Length: 307
Image: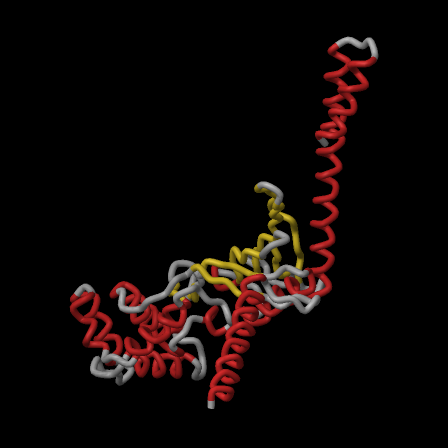
């Protein structure tokens, strides 16, 4: 753009014209460049929608562009997908796409929603879209919840850690720098009897939970994991039981408010693209591994030589 302006300016200086003409020429050039850039963004955005429709069934899902922003040289385009068969509150996912990464703003677990697709299915398809588009990583902040009704919900990451020792996103490969340490600490915590966290929460709230748990033959001397396994087993049996779901909510809320679990909600997953190249971070790790292996062979060769 600067080159074009300089050329126009040099031509202008060599020919007799009024300053107004020069200003109008520069303005026209700038408008043309900006409109060209906008049309390119629109084309890429539409291409992304077409690519998403290759992965998600168009007869089930409607995808719309909801935002467009630019930071420096990076363009960020937001997309929202809703389920056509759900009558209301039908959002399935919301993502923001840039050439460097995809930000998951939310899938069905982040809102009280009637989306008929499973969370596992949605996440798998978003990763497929990233892989096909050559986008090397996916990032998110884990605010996911399980909704009982419009007024009541509980944290999915707390619930999942109590059951499995890792969050739902951790189980799908989304990690932070401290995930491995979190796993070790949380494993110890979930194997601790519930009465050990009694002093960390409101006595009245704790007693209300004990009364609720007694109705399911659960004792406070049992570990957090044992209690969660029993409650989840009951949840999977037969028909929907609102009182059981409220007891699960009380238990999950109590553990969360006690602060005994450790979890960084800012997560990322590196995606191996179709070109076969993982993200830069993964490639650096590979290079280090190769260098370490080479040093190890050299040390081994030296040892053999001196023997």
